[in-house]
Length: 356
Image 1: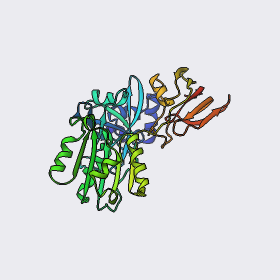
Image 2 (image 1 turned 60 degrees about the horizontal axis):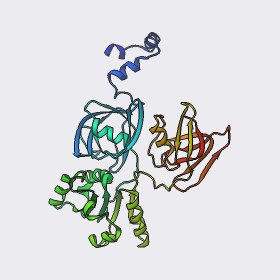
Image 3 (image 1 turned 30 degrees about the horizontal axis):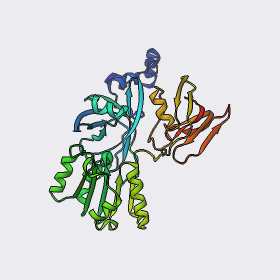
Image 4 (image 1 turned 90 degrees about the vertical axis):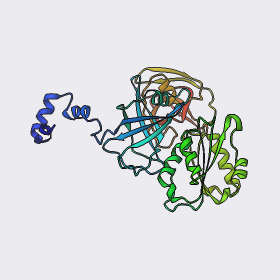
């Protein structure tokens, strides 16, 4: 390796000619896969089970990683059955870790190809593709006097990143968290320890016995509800209810929400989706995003947040019609057109052709 580093530019070009079509940088990437700042990767250094269906992955990011802010997420790329799939996961560790590692905590959801793969099959030494952190679900620079976190399921993950990073700067913290059972609470032991130490007030809701939490419950459980800055993350139905409740109280400015998936309306019609480059044809009912339909058929497509925000999933609609699942609006392409559409929030509204 030392010899290669001392080669002059002319000698380096000779080496490239000899090794073409594989250039020396490719060999270096194979030996040291985290060295390339232009192709960001991470190595799994540990896998810690959290519950029966969730696990925390300790990752060593490669060159090109930038420190995250508590509450942010990162896109993770995983090769499953020869197809690279990208998903976004909240970073659950503090940016102040001295070893430079980060953690993500993954909950295996039914039918979730990537989440199940990571929870069941991730092992030390596995390489993952990675993108730099992003997201606006953040604490303000001036910490609030009173804070409330309302979460359900894996919605606790960005909040845990906040608590681990900034709890010492927060004076009055209430955490309301819902999970199916006592055993299904991700970070349950850590949250209960924080509560026992008096650092947070923890309200657990076990939905299999207690039912889903509603805004009216919060009015009773947290009497000073509208005196607090609030962060909420969880299922869309819960967030819809919370946003309506805070709006009715003219306190919407106090509520910050984070959605893992966009709120989608029911599709209509559906049809045949043809992916022109691969020749793959998929029949859909109009309720499944083009991105999901393609991935289920083994079609590799670009993706990012999967929420219609980052525009990483945009592909040309060459012919036919698609429907925006957020508002029902139609986009129609005539033969010969090339109209960009977001595949993560668009579904077929009749036969259509996507260039991919």
